Amino acid sequence: MCSTSQTSKVAYCFKGTFVHSTNCSPMEILRDHIMGVSSNGKIEFFEHARNQAGLERKWRFNRSDIRELDNHEFCMPGMVDTHIHASQYSFSGTALDLPLLDWLDKYTFPTESKYKEQELAKNIYSKVVRRTLKNGTTTACYFATIYKDSSLLLAEIAHNYGQRAFVGKVSMDINNHVTNYKETTDGSIAETERFIRELLERKYCRVKPIVTPRFAVSCSEKLLQELGELAEIYGTHIQSHISEADGEMKRVKALFPNYKNYADVYDKNKLLTDKTVMAHGCYLSDEELELFRERGAAISHCPSSNLSLCSGHLDVRKVLEHRVKIGLGTDVAGGYSPSMLDTIRRAMDTSKVLFIQHELGQKIDGSSLHSPHINQPTMPTSQTLLIQKEKYAAITYKEAFRLATLGGSQALNIDDVTGNFQVGKEFDAVLVSPTVPDGPFEVFADDTFEDIVQKFLFLGDDRNIKEVYVAGKQVVPLPNAA
Ligand code: GUN
Ligand code: ZN
Image (cartoon, rainbow, N blue to C red; front, side, top):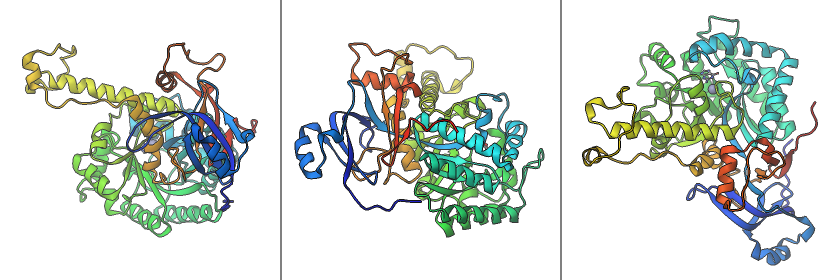
């Protein structure tokens, strides 16, 4: 049940180094700061430690309420996974040898069809919630399966472990010839409405339903229309996939010939709102991106999945230039890793690939732009420099960090509650310990704090994630295995 406590007594404080993003800065490293967290999980103050005496008087806390971080330790915001299939966790790290539509038929639908079985669902859903929390994911936007009851179970498990989550019962009524994993149109609408109502009735404070048409390939026009209505009636969030892969795009064109483009299919059915997050978007046109911006809809960038299924690349720089909200998603199991740190790395890799392509394209004459035969970057000459237009900038590690935290919260429209350490938001945080025994990287005497943060982002893993907090409540270390 959701606690409605209005008290603002400071329950505990952290003192030391904090790393977070703001709209103005992709990464701020704030040394020697003190943060107070209230008993209702909110950040009450966040100031330089030189103000400690005044804060102690104002907030009436004792020195014993202050947790002092070690020399290299820091707190960063919890990471936001804006797109993850909880039901695919069992085969993550395998089965990445087919393009999207074949992959769905061969591996995904047969796996998801097993979730009618509650015991199986309980086992795997508990494991994915535990694994993601351990890796610092404080908010997850989950796809479950078409089964209402086991989807409710996922919501209950996330709630019990204290993870902030959106949970979607998947809706799909057409185009699955391989298994019995399909709904009737009316059945899908009715079950989705029941799912929303039953989950809302549970009044979980931080776990909410999200309307989840699988993607336009799997949904009839009537189903899309009715799901758009349900999202409007219940004021829910919406998630789906868009413009991920070539085969999918061709199918959508054939299925929906009267729509202007892929984004229009969702938009005309009221599925593109400021509470929508669409995964992938690799092939969205400028016009579609403009529509996203106008509607306030967001993109979940899933670089690991895009590489693993050879789907394509999303140009994050272009999305940012269009001022479309964007976060990162693991897209387990299309993406093989449930770790958002891994996703941060894949996002940077993808952006660098696009940078290389851009550089090559700029340095050759127009007729051979993007020629596959040109595989050696040439040193710029006065002639090639003349051809060079604007410089393309790959996203930096700081920008990738922002996408994984503040960007994700903006994409899910919860940035008034979480995403960074702004006073008034809930304390969703990861306590990072860069120098754990037997850890995944070394810290050397001449490393700056910025170096240490960078090393954690490139080389760190859950061994460095000492503690995790959601709305002020400690959720990692996890309770013992069930
Ligand atoms: N498009 C429709 N369903 C899926 C899915 O399960 N994973 C991915 N990556 N794309 C999809
Ligand atoms: Zn997906």
